View: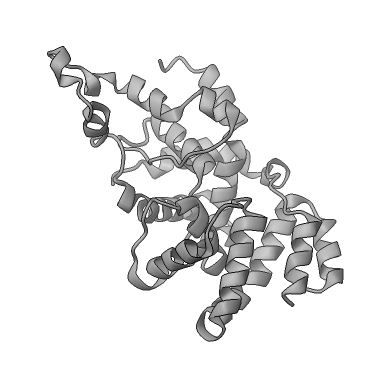
Length: 263
């Protein structure tokens, strides 16, 4: 995949200094008490975390949980499953995620380097808590922001498939539609008969990364971005760039779209 890293970094640079304020995803005290019950943190630590801004809470939680996840993956797999599903369901908000499917996919990623697109928003949460130097969370907001940067800055000619999301602003300005409109020559036909049942699926192939390659490609791209974007230890952990992409998706990116003369 050929991406212009400098253009992506230049776009994101203006938001980096305020990431601590932009990031607003926050796990509840009720959910923190669940890992108190698991023996991961004390009640006092849960109260301390709950008092922090979402950004600082996030950074501390990742630092606390990483060694516990790594140790339990090797030595106490039932506990690892419980903690992993806490990340997905309580921290991540994906209540309907099934343990058997999610954890099996985590194992496939870690041990077989197989990263399917199905359930990527779930299993990638566990992966990034375990190894933030290699993995990030691949969800609808992160993919939305990254695709807009690639499109608007002409930083790439192929885009990331976007998991289903429930954000009304992002749904209103559907990124897949914007990409197709910008590349509408890709969908031109000589005859109406060409617009068959597989028309969009077949034409999308030249514009979107294959789903079974998307997670690995996004991790690699964000790693390259992070090394140039941050001048601190943040460069080594992919979640700082991921948090930035997540935070601007339904705010600054939407503003950018509605003010754009791209279409």
